[in-house]
Length: 446
Ligand code: ADP
Image (cartoon, rainbow, N blue to C red):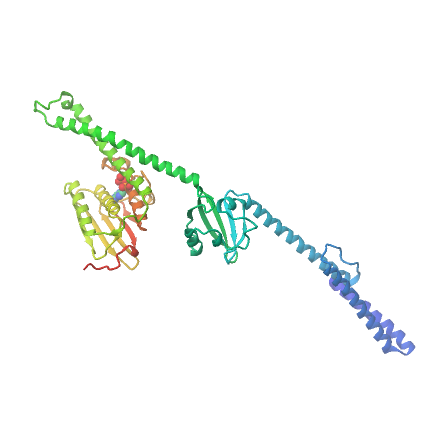
């Protein structure tokens, strides 16, 4: 279509020049006539350009000026592009409005921050959760308005892989979970979620478990005390002062033994539940100190060997020049759990090796056994509370199903990880992987 317009335009110009040329040569003024025709064509062209320029500069939605031929086509083209541009802009604006409306209606506080750290936009929830007012606070530095040092450190650290828990800077009754992500060219989107109720429920659950465990301990101690007395009496047959008909009855003796076993299990369960509650309530690093691993591991070795009546062999392969920093009681509990497990899930004569060593990044406390091993499918779930591969086997060995959960919790408090590997029927290795920063700087003892 455009080529046709161009052709028509060229043809019209050629006809104009031809006619004026003919008339000009007829009257003897060929050059003047051609000059006049060319100037007229240029003037008309300039006139059309001026109309377009006036129309474009009006910046209204007015229709383009009427024009025919090539100029009409040019005007139509410009008009079409202009309309497309406007429609695109409207669509984009509608999307932006839609997104802002949906963010605005969120219960979570949402704040858009530009690459210089200035607030671009925030929603209503950000006002009562963070104290930010939009549009009053637009273009203000976020860290000038939220002055919590923990928040400033988090915001400026640039590592947002984990969220941050803080009290609301606006209303101390709110606890907020802050998460930030990057978008566009260095802009950031901050979400502040009110987790007050969630935290309250969590705390209630923790308190409940701690209180129940604590309350159960006293009656259980009394019951166990009486059962032990009965058991002792049952065991001293023939002594006229201690003979008790009920306790000496064979079926009663079996019942008493079972009651004692079960009360021991309950005692272990309560002990482990209380340990978990304590770990959840006591802040980390409150008693960190350099630990003397040698006596600690020797004691654990003695305890386990005695508990298993010398039917397990425990070897120590340790580099004691590496001094671990941590909470001694917690770590003793974690290591004991691992060594106990290794003994529990091994046969008589089983060999358990405890290793303590380091490499460039980590130091490791490893417990290896040649016991029954664990099928791969169970490994990822072993640290879940009450998860056991074989429940009856665990109960039989006095297990509670909480041991590895406790180990994991203790290691987390030391920025360490529990790694496990096992081959069914051949044995298992449980490794506590500590970061090297957990070592005392002077690695060699004087
Ligand atoms: P439990 O009190 O039952 O031992 P744990 O949390 O300590 O609970 O361990 C969870 C489960 O992991 C155990 O029930 C057992 O099946 C398995 N397990 C742990 N340590 C070992 C090990 N060294 N060898 C084989 N299985 C193990």
